[in-house]
Image (cartoon, rainbow, N blue to C red):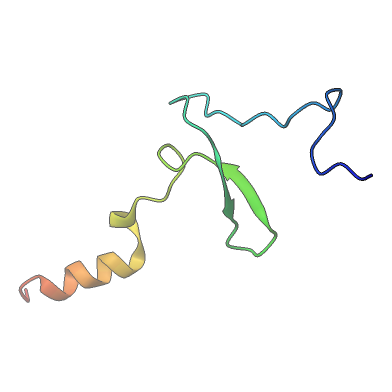
Length: 65
């Protein structure tokens, strides 16, 4: 009979914790397509206001000089 659950001797995987904010790290896809990397969404996340697309949008609403 095959067991579908780990035996008592098998250690369960531990969650990874951010050293700065102590929240659980999430496996996020990498831009280069090399898989996933554990990152903190709050500490290591990209600030959307600094993205090139948002800067173009903001400049489109500024009055001409």
